[in-house]
Image (cartoon, rainbow over all chains, first blue to last red; front, top):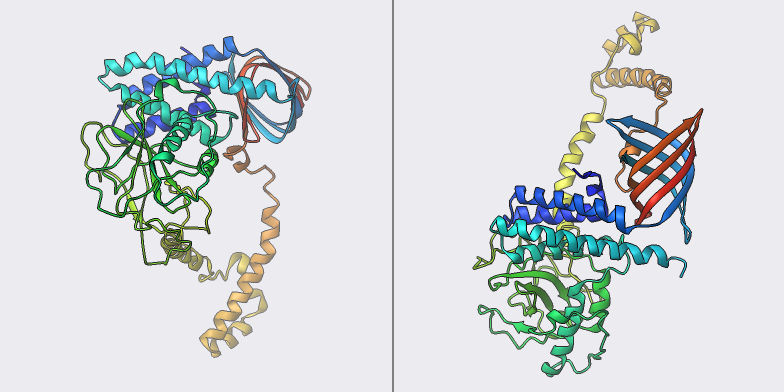
Length: 101
Length: 378
């Protein structure tokens, strides 16, 4: 069963919104929408695992940490994300991480 | 060049995920007895929302190219009034072979006999569409839509005409000439008189069911005014986010009333004369004198006493709360990284993160990584 973790991303949210619109107009059932989301979970999990091959480094200060139900949630401040090609700076970032094993 | 790595891979990955998902659910849709066009509509909605979010660069949309092709088709057809429009041939960004044919101007049967409406989407339109903020499934309330047509976008051209670009079931695109809403005719009307022409602007999207629809099915219409700012091409937003004067007035008055009420209840009307607001230490003489005075003066003095007591108190209490606002963590537009962890390590207050397979949204843009390593001090 793939993680539903990626539903709260741009890609996942736009899919959910689109499905909601179709449900509202009664073109699909909620059950069908759920099936689509489950399929999305599988697709995004496998795409990330197989089609992405890049590394990122980051550094910042840790504001809060939480470990609950095997999910880590961090809030970092003044973080720099560094990829080979570019540098991204943010004042605050929330990291939600599920167990990778 | 420096940014090319991420901006190239992210749209491609998203595209491939969309394709995979759509193809995988096609069977589920058919099993449920849902038509293929609903699937196409889902795909359109999904792509449009991704485009609107601007989290991904270079995310082309098929509608844009179709609109370009329609534009090129219409220019030779319409010769009546718009010679002065410079017909720039914008190059389609990508070829969409399967949809090159069947673009027609669809005139609904119930269209009123207005002067022949010329539809010449300006080339500016195309550029505007990139930045447009349209809901993908906007429905025309006043237009009689042919069966099975899903309206996609509403566009206002320079000449002040309301365009509707729709995508039909088979993927072809049509442009519907509007009927009554275009009292605007062909002359450029820079300013709309308030209370003059009020074209109903479509609010929320309920895509019509295929196979025969009542045009008014489940569509919310609010009479609004179409704003013309000079001669600028303007895209009519069909979402609630469009602020227009009429709407602003309606909502403003609605908001004023509930806001006024809490304001009133905040004024101190109940006085505390014991405990912290205790003024009895001032001796009873003052109170006895107060009784002789008018009620107004008495209330004023007591109010002052109570307020003074509160003012002294607030600084004391307000220092008790040390924690950060919880609102910080719940704030919506903050940068988010969604991923999986390989290893999280801590030594005293030094944390090390080993993460993988993540999608990041930083400063409004999307990034992806297969591995991420980080350090932080708590």
